[in-house]
Amino acid sequence: MAMHDPDAMSWSGLGVGTDRESFLRHVSEQLPAYEPDKAVEAVCAALFRRLPGGIVQQLLAQFSPDAREMLLPFAKDVNAPPEKLDREDFYLMVANRLNADPEGVRLVLHGVFAAMQTQITKAEYLKVRDHLPDYLDGTWADSRRGVDIPY
Image (tube, rainbow, N blue to C red; front, side):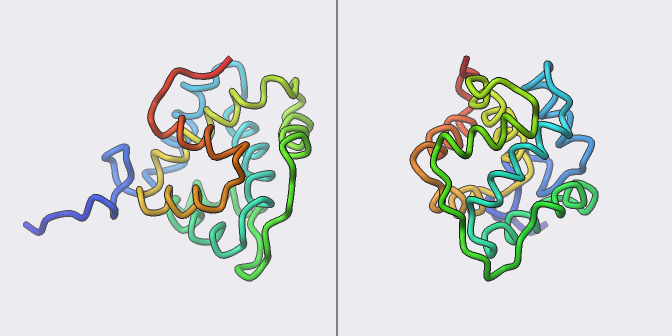
């Protein structure tokens, strides 16, 4: 039996892109007050705008086909540059899409980011992190480490 490359599997140990159901279950566990698919859509709609198109495409490739299908409406062309969204605009974009209080957006980001990281490799996590602004980098890293959910 061949040894597995740890970067070729997701951190859940279940393999890259387990499936849509497991992904949404992770979101629901993190964010019981929100509909998981709506939380994912709100975060990814903003996150994908903030990332370069090539990184978005690589990130999407990590998800199972059924999970990827729900994220495709927010994808962008591989050559599309990232949009320069400041923290306030980014948080407001997520809050408006989710009909949530902007002050609670960090909790939503944390929950969706944590669930995303069960579906992607460590190498992909690092690629995304390299393209995040400071106001998202800390939440992305904290959700990876499994720290307490922010309030």
